[in-house]
Image 1 (cartoon, each protein chain N blue to C red):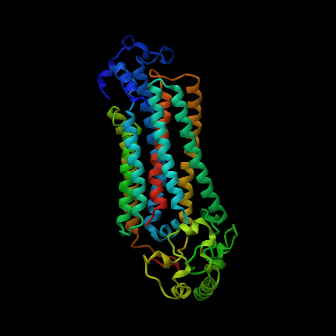
Image 2 (image 1 turned 90 degrees about the vertical axis):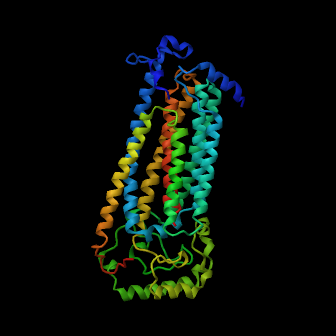
Image 3 (image 1 turned 45 degrees about the vertical axis):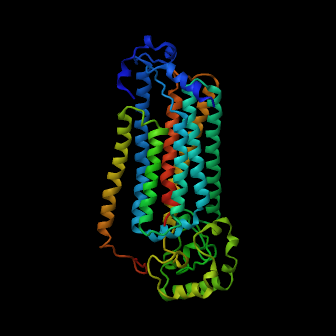
Length: 120
Length: 319
């Protein structure tokens, strides 16, 4: 792909244009990073790190999600308000799940298993 | 990016002012575009909240019953799930690229990239079909539909007690059947385990790719080991090859089918939207001055990718 001509076209458009084409190189680098992180997240499951495995998997997922959001979804280039909406939704989900798990954890002590069920 | 741009008037915009696309209640194409995008992000926020409910259910079930997740996830094929992750990431790339080429007035390249994106969606759904079919055939289904025979399928694993519900009947089993005396259950369990030890588990890999890829080692660990383990109490968080079949495995499959099902539905909707965009691209509707539909469908497609990025490790890669 003749990337130079495209870049020229971009500069001709000037900063008044509504279009902001993301450089192809950026897209490809992000794509490669996502692929590498996918391989990594699968590879990590072959190593037993106990409870840490879940958190590593989640951290990699958050990293991948951030790359998708920031570059594929333009948030890096957008006005901050779109990102604010996105993050707000994530915060709401965290508020939803967090205290629910606190509740679940709190009643675990009082949980009476039905007869015959072994509780670990 | 720069907020000052918002004051741009159509007069100064030259070739990117496409009056036919500018609705009369907007001042500039830019204002129109950014309003549309804001609306799309608001919609995506509600999508995240909808999936948030399912992620919450997942968290509660997993917190309460880690053993179910640890056991049942071995029925999911990591390779197929990983392939689907790769497919979605690639289709996200082609989608983002298509938005770029639209903005650069290259409709033919855009059409090609949109076709590739569609191909990715079709590939994802095909693999999903293979996975669902496999689970359907083995009775690995949600709720009362679950009728998997835990004794034969999964090499190296013996049941704690044969479940009355697991004999292929879809209707709920009568209460008496569930309330078997513990001794009988244990005895039958041992019997079954011996059965497994004597024969069925001898050809552990015959069950197909699912068995081959599972973390559970074939019965090479020793038939006696399998039987012994049933008779003894197994401590929690045992190595996978000695894992006990937990109760209520269907819980995992309820969560699995709900989450991947809703996600798959989004992939299908996304494919429909991309087809619409493709047709309009071929008709020459989009260019550097008007590309909002391509961009917004792209945002939707990336969100679908984003959700899968979380579903994949949470369902397939449990450790």
